[in-house]
Length: 436
Image (cartoon, rainbow, N blue to C red):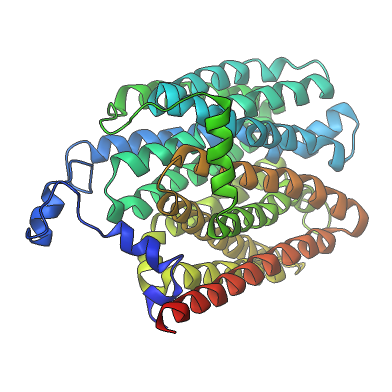
């Protein structure tokens, strides 16, 4: 099957390759591309923009999941079970999911760059308060506020890229932003693991706050001023109409569900894996458990190469491969052999980040208006999946051990495959209608 026949939508791909309207119909393709003032690899500002958003991704995931590798220590200090400690993760991702749509509306009115900057400032400020939480309840509240503040970043970043980067480079640019997410998630967990082993989880969370401050300052200095942003309206009826239009688009709804299901797997696995590795038969120390998250580097690679994967297999082909890779990793992780568990985590991470990069970039291409809201709905579904995965995965672990968590993940992957099969058949039926 050709890449075009397996893509998110042949119509969307066609739109993405149409020359700029500034070019006349008689112009050759090269001249049309030259008339497009948006950024492209090798062009002015592209590297600065890529690095700035990479750092924003690092700060976002480092802050968002700063307590995930520390859950066994938090359970020990407050005397709670894994399902209760997991709320320090679920509150942050849930806060982001709830506020990402309102924050995207603000970015339509006041600009992507301004909203992303404000979000980082608030999030890093709260991050410096988190280590002083006197109880689990206060810790959960602060984490929820931190997640709500971070909501201004994901949707605004993808909307910024969709407006400022040429369509052919969009998947690669978003892949680099997602790669920053993976580096942030990895560095946050590795740093907290080793720091917590020596000085406790509070100092570890504080160290992540300092790292995020550095990333936020560099982001604000490096990110180029947007040139293609047009302010929108903050009127509630306009926002409601835009959201309704996106939710009535079957392709967008499928992409939202795919993002949520992939994140259900990922959230469940990485919330519970610390408990599994600190218990028998592994009984690893906290520093080593934190180092396990170095497998996030695999996600950095798979996300940044998502564009080439789509070019070879098409979007649906890439999603099938990502789902199959994730499911294989889940099955490997059932073994009581540490090398096989690590191999399973590698495959789960590679499949997740590839699937996320493909789905999120497809959302940006599909939405021709209200891109921030389209991205916000994807991010909302994505982080709802994270909250559900972290909570349900912890409950399943408490009830049935690691096999229970894996069972939740396998069901989510089956959901991804089912939705993708349905989308493939819908695309084929749509292709046959004009011929008939």
